[in-house]
Each structure stands twice: as structure tokens, then as C-alpha cells.
Image (cartoon, rainbow, N blue to C red; front, side, top):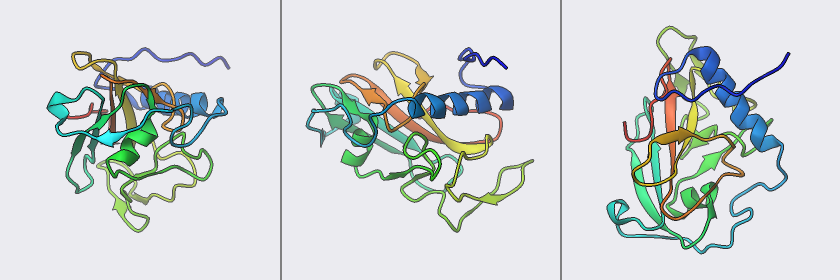
Length: 185
């Protein structure tokens, strides 16, 4: 069976397209050898004053249906840095899965918690174990934005290998249901 990459059509997706994108993001990251925070990066990153005035990398974390405040911050950078490093710099923790490591995001700041029941209307409730891929109806979506004026694009590689440059943005959104909202929407 031949797989082809789906065409990006923000912000609505069908379950089939959504599942293909999650699989594509996970598999593209698995094909690389560099992993972990800072892989291929030599930039020094520190938190800047304001996301509105960000000349480095803007970071947005939207917890969606998980009861937590959205995080928006700026990481000072003068060259490309690992997306995972940009998150860690502002104190955002991530956890991958046993099977795919840091190529997918299973938890952000311990959400969904290991003992937290995730409820999505029309779907079976579950507790995230982080053993493999999350269900296509409840997962952390990884987004990138090429410039402040650009639209958000679904990341085509995993958090473990994604690099972002000054002027770009990286976002994580906990996505549930049939729509995949972009960061800040």
C-alpha cells in the first residue's frame, strides 16, 4: 500500500487525515538520528520580556480541554534552536512515549496526568499511558509558524528533531474531537 502525504487544510481535519498527519509526524522523526533537546543546536536561549516584541522564538502552549492556562512566551535566540529546547527554556516540560520517544508529545507539564481520565464527546474515555501513539481524537498537536505574519502549519517532524529559527514560532495544542485548532485560536 502506497502512503502519500495529505494536503494541509487548516484548521479542520477528518479523522483519516488527522491520523495520517500524526503518523507522518511520528515516522518522519523516527527516520532521523539526532534526538533530544538541543540536538544540532548551539544557540544560547533565555526567556525574553514580551512575546509581542519577540525577536527570538515565540512559544505557545494551548491546553485545550485540559484545565490549564495557555502559555505564551518568547525565547531569545540568534540562531536555530531545537523546539524542545525552546519549551524547556520557558519551563514547559514534555514527555514522549515509550514506543516513539520524543518524536511525539504525550504530556505537557504532566497533562494529561497519568491518572487523569480524558473525556471526548462521542469517543471512549481513556487514561493516557504514553506507551505508544495517542488516539487520533485526543493528542498534542505540534505546530510551526515560519514568520510572525504567516499562518500556523502542522509540523512535519517530531518535537525531538524540529528546529526553529529567530522570528519563527512553535506551538503545542491539546486537540480533541474532529477539529485541530491552531495555537491561540
